[in-house]
Image (cartoon, rainbow, N blue to C red; front, side, top):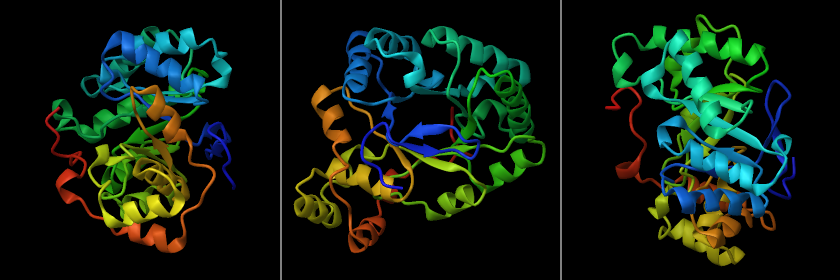
Length: 285
């Protein structure tokens, strides 16, 4: 599939289309400026907004969506179950709170944010199963168009599959040059899941690596644009974040070039283990 613009979509296994680049909202907690950043992203052509209750800014995100003036059905909005609210009843309550904070009547995608939060460390599989039962009910009621997970490894997926009636459609993981977790990608995609890539720019940690610098020079692009293009060519959806309107537009300008096989291989080989994502089984939140 050839991607030519932000609104071009990948298709989930249930037939729902999901725009190929999302706007990430992690750490955007300055109410005024971040509402403006969401509006700027939508003005720049983004139609995919990735939120989460844990980020503490869903009301600001919702205001940005409302003030953009774009019809709700033209947007793809994601949120995630907060760690302290796993379990059947808690999940239903958390979902209602997220909708209220965002000011929306439905979500396009809802994810279990982390598989093994500290509060449920001794019984995480049961807590996930009960949350997923609630997810399936909300999905069946039409309040969510797609359901999935985030930061899940193989053993988390295996445990969930023991009771799930609907398989997860998405696994959102940290994926960027420096953290190319091929085993997680393969485990997820063989189960029919689409990969979303949070922190696709690695917060700039690998921008000075030779493979990125050479590719950027060859294509007349920035290292950030190379990172986003790299994700897309892996068939994954990057979720870059910025509070700068200029950077937001720049991150979307990735459809007029293609990385070669040699460039992809060189970027795959970058390692930055010091900045790898947290182990979902040892997180302290």
